Image 1 (cartoon, helix red, strand yellow):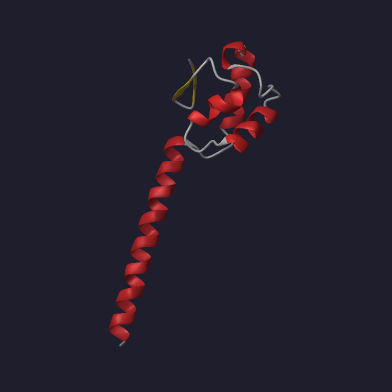
Image 2: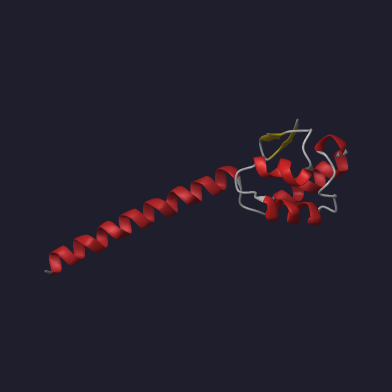
Length: 95
């Protein structure tokens, strides 16, 4: 398995599918990453050479993925929940 951003991606899959194993990368973003790296999306991960893998890692680094994205999502959820609670408390005290 190839390892990108701390995630093992399966070698038997095409690049566009294999990259979706990384949290924060869907099909459209995987295609964009492969396009930026000049690697065919139909090329299997097992066919990638070290140069292709390095280009893909560099392209993936331009996006928020994995831990950074999970942290941001958690912060946004907490902010939204506490924001709603504050609004409800204000309306209760205003009545």
